[in-house]
Length: 73
Image 1 (cartoon, helix red, strand yellow):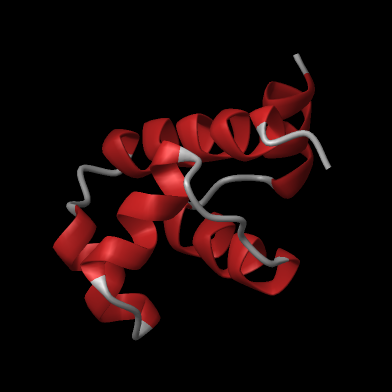
Image 2 (image 1 turned 135 degrees about the vertical axis):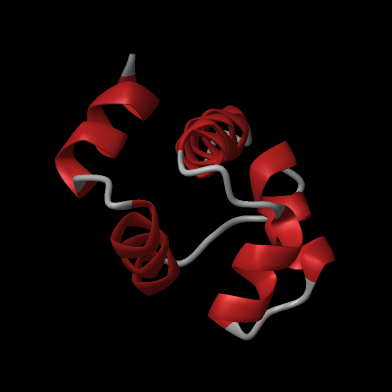
């Protein structure tokens, strides 16, 4: 898979997180993950699994279809 998709997905998720005024620490604590995990996702250094995307969308109150469209553009 093209690594560029990881960067696009991370950037969209980062923007959604910031719109909710959440820090990396906030998200890490809620998700039960490390701060570096979410940082790596947002920077595109690591891939994210679909179930984690769904959890982040719920946390950010974001529609998965909207997130997918933003990543696709």
